[in-house]
Image 1 (cartoon, rainbow, N blue to C red):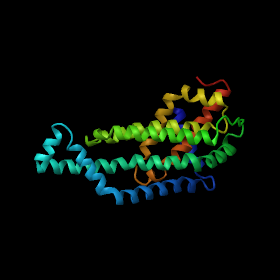
Image 2: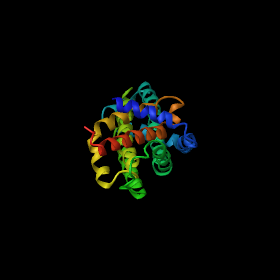
Image 3: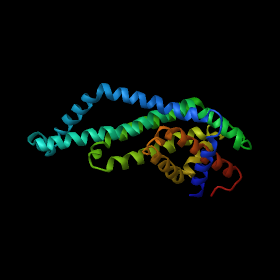
Image 4: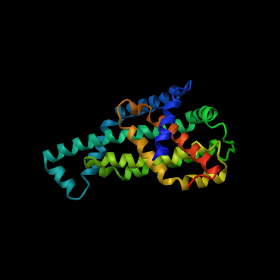
Length: 243
């Protein structure tokens, strides 16, 4: 737990680095605009498709079709679920932009200032980063779609979003944080050894996506937290101190 707090503290300190704030903000702005524009042009289609899908459900479909109150309630729940579903999708888009474009610069500046003692063994690659990010993103979307019926239950959608985002953070940012400094074996073994704390850290970062205003920089800040956590873990492993 202390490692997690340390990573958050160091990430906050890294915000003083010139240019860091801009690379935290622009991915969120781009992702937000993309999804807002997409929602504006597809809202009616999405709502209609969701209502039509619900009407095919056994029992629930007959109830919705036979009662105006049930139909109205279902319509409200569908709209709420669609809005809530946009939060992890916006986060996912911003996280992809961060992982592919912004994170390499962030790692370079943070490592130069705070991890200069770590040898750069470059076991990862840009292609590996892109492949890892795309695979994580595809699986994230698949799990999100499969879980959509649960989002009609108040509160469950938020829980699903947090769990999926925690996994996405650990899977995507874990690799990218190590790709310049770790060798191939370290990239393969360190995330496995640190799986539980990485998921816990990913969950803590996922909470930021639901805090107003903070959510604008949550993906990039989460990446920065993982940079500190993973590089410190790598430093400890090479020193033979990682339990």
